[in-house]
Length: 530
Image 1 (cartoon, one colour):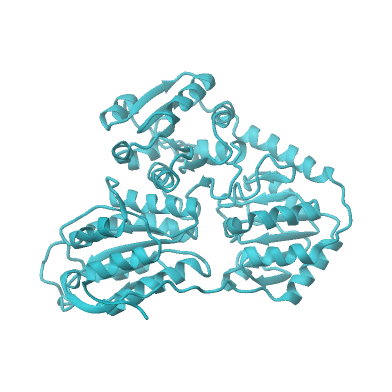
Image 2: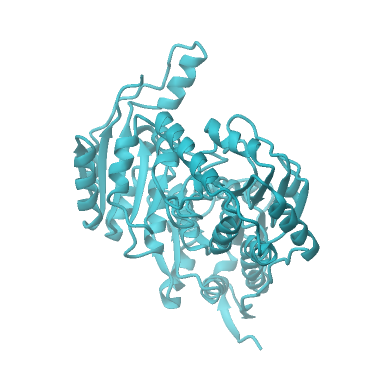
């Protein structure tokens, strides 16, 4: 039987989080949420303080992507809750489980308002636009149940953000309440007949291929085994980068915008796509079509979106691929050189597209461990450079804001990843335009004493939009920005900064930064556009 105790609602919240294995929350205290802070230390929950609520959301996102467990962020009312919306929208877009908790107006607060501090018309409604569920509780018992429900929702089915709002007057009220223990929900089992059908079709294929999305992160070993049985080249989406070690002979590319990636899909007589939206943000030139498409996805609605399959299987990726792995044995031998030829072609295309950054990516790769985490921003150096030319070898090793496409993600996401994985190498890759969205988080990293190199590629503003304007025949406007003294800025925020003069200097500086507590901004001047 659950233990019954008299507690404030703030303690119900914190005790419930602890019961669900939460060890860290990211947030900023404010007038209306300080009662939550009364209990964090007592329940063994670490608090990390970013310098902006959007940073708290991205940090929770980086924590979740790295660990596979929900990240938790706490804000106060009104403007603080609104500050985190962009980060929550990004997590929704990329299927990242984060829980956002905030106080809201008192239980009996008038709908028309009174002009109280941080008052807004519908805080829960604003959060509902970017979360899977947004719930305002009205009692201690409902809160205990809501936390358990949130974790079920985030850890079964397609993971996405959840919002819980607690009326600020409830936070201090006491009631006799029991905490709800974590609820285990089994992942959906795939239909054995459909799995057998997919196995037969793949076994009979002469040119099979695999496409692994972010939903396959939990199934890396089985994905590798299936690919090996089929001798099939493997593409991954941006969020799937690293599910298969990128130095594996069957791993082709995560840069799906390259022409060769579409050509590979169209060459396949059977393509197995697992845990992917087949989204335009991966396939920039339209989703290509194989002769026969098999889709595995935990989201039933997603099974027919963007590309309609010939065979659709509702399945958790791990269970689906494990069953497929068993059903596939034995498989006829195939030409082992096919994957190598595609790998060579795609590597050449990636180097050509990212030529401006290849030498720097090679320098970075020479320093990183195989299990390193790279948090990347929406910068040209990242999606043209790192995506195709910086190898990643572990699931969740490349954190990137696809879909929603926010700027300022990389630095706070790297903070969250580093908090989640002490002793593991974590770096951030940013452009100078995007860095200025969240540069204040250098101070948060410095306060935590975490070694965190931040490589900033400087092109004098918003390079991609500058190129877009030129391509559209528009004289560039509002995209050429003065570049701050980043070295001095980093030092003023408690870190260090180095102006890197070339690839060798970058590698040397990166190695030193990984050994130094606190952030180090490694400034790289990009070569001029061709």
